Length: 111
Length: 114
Image (tube, rainbow over all chains, first blue to last red):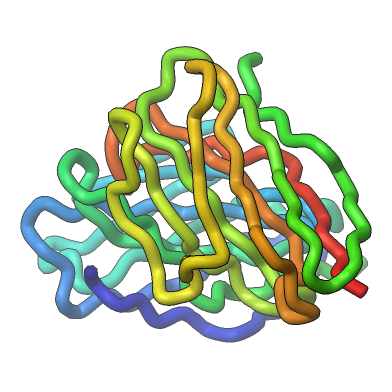
């Protein structure tokens, strides 16, 4: 399983764009990159998943460079309610069964 | 929107007692998971389950733990003899396809062992 490295914490202000970068140097050819969000006392919630280049949905964008050794989750115009822990996961979409969460990045959005 | 449901939301038990945590995964999902999260710590993988058998388990998932899908809808986690250190939030998750697909998590069951 590819190991991921993320910043432990980040601070931002309401209305700003937040970019959280994750390193996954030993990502395998079949691995996808998935981001989850977790609020206190709740289960993680899927945000976005990608394999390469750029993926965008109504919540976030995911940028993946050509070498796929890192990825950046971009949250446009954050609000106080985006304060949460964000996890970057790397794994085989089809064949593997174990999905491992790292320590995540604790994002704190201030007014 | 379909969701994973877990019961109980909170259970308090005495050390040494057996506990069963229940989960109803999303109906067309094929892979099921249990995770736990000790307060203030990261989400830890316990076990994955597919085709009525354990696919993978972590070192945390020792002989005190067992999982079962007794009736095709429920997915249970049993802790035979609880310890103080088992106090945590336990999350059930399910996914249509394998790991790295979109995991759907339940709201969790908080277990407090006294």
